[in-house]
Amino acid sequence: MSDHEIDTSILIGSLRAEYKTLEAMVKIYCKDHHGTRALCDECADFLHYALTKLDRCPYGEEKPTCKLCPIHCYKAEYKERSRIIMRYSGPKMLLRHPILAIRHLIAGKKPVPAKPAPNASNRHKRKSLNR
Ligand SMILES: [Zn+2]
Image 1 (cartoon, rainbow, N blue to C red):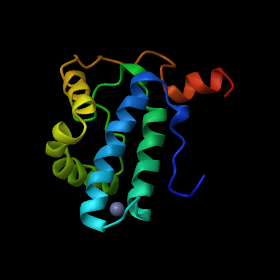
Image 2 (cartoon, protein in one colour):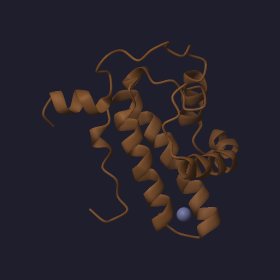
Image 3 (cartoon, rainbow, N blue to C red):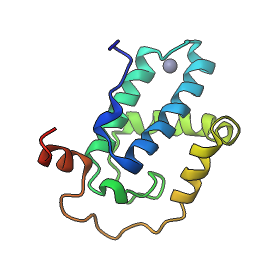
Image 4 (cartoon, rainbow, N blue to C red):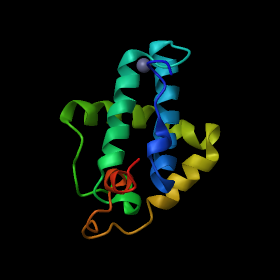
């Protein structure tokens, strides 16, 4: 595995789909701004960070879209990067990745759970399966 390949197999179900959406957005952004064929170090670092956050999200698969989430789990620096990437790539997603884009739009209509269920995070489930 090269430095820039990220192991998404640790994520289950909708969390993996959400990661794929994010990855597609980062790739669009990186290609247009950093001129890289794959991902530059900075964008790869961002995706690693995002993957960790998805893994640890206390909502687990019930996770609302990040825009609606009451928990602000990103550090300021990454939150800002995320905002810039979404603003650029968001509108391009419908054309380039319509299925991911529509899935994300539908996810945005789901009500936000009031409180995460106990031990719902991907990380917790992963550890309890001893993976
Ligand atoms: Zn980049």
